[in-house]
Length: 205
Ligand code: GAR
Image 1: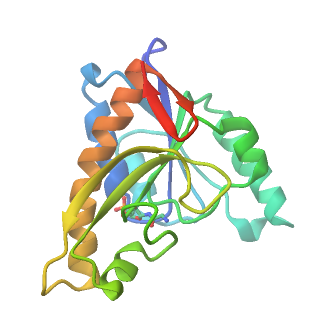
Image 2 (image 1 turned 90 degrees about the horizontal axis):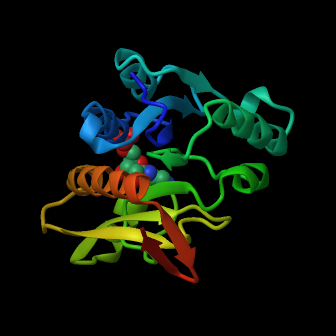
């Protein structure tokens, strides 16, 4: 059940959706103070969408390939998200860059989680790039989405140690454990308390 008084979250996913599941589980408690009102994806048939369906949350899919141009896709994604009137949009393993139409509608209130400590290792392969570089600590970063690749104002970061015997999968799994806690805690806090951005700083409340 969604409560009209509670902030509305739309979550976008591209894969397994374990971060989404953490948000769904947290939001099931009324004390969390925010509702996941819809889940969108850029591809069909993924576990992230199945998780939403099992939780009784409406879903939608906008595939880039179904549109004549990237700009058309961006406009369609923006409209699909807007239909659910979100207060906050959360990209949780969403493997596409949103475009100008999306940012015009939801800039400043779209969060993304990245599996590295920004500004190190932006892009699609954060855990692999950290491992290849040989860093001893890496982690995850929650940030406010802007037009760059993982460049937005930082909300929170968590540090994860790289072990000598890590491979990309084991490292990414350890990062994702930290990421889920960070995401749940910070999304709830921002949704309940509100926030504003001043320069490179995010101020809560
Ligand atoms: C997460 O580690 C997230 O940070 C990453 O994908 C994973 C999704 O896991 N996102 C990116 O790399 C975005 N560039 P999940 O589907 O199990 O939540």
